[in-house]
Length: 90
Image (cartoon, rainbow, N blue to C red; front, side):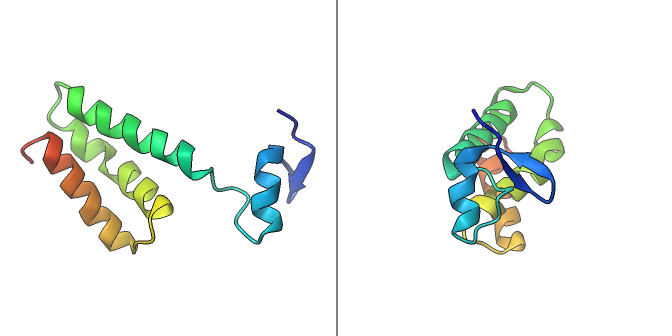
């Protein structure tokens, strides 16, 4: 993948150029990659034998949900709690 597009002196993959040209933040990942990260975190929470892992990853899950969905940060946090509750009896 070429990185001939630059934002503030930082090379950015060209697939993000279109997002930046349309006024979007060029540092955001495409939504399908964010969905993969959300699925990965929820899978880690589901399979982990450590009961504290849900709390450890809840902040990251909240941030990903906030970026991916049109929610306030508080709503994203509540959504993360509900997802975690679905996998663990928290």
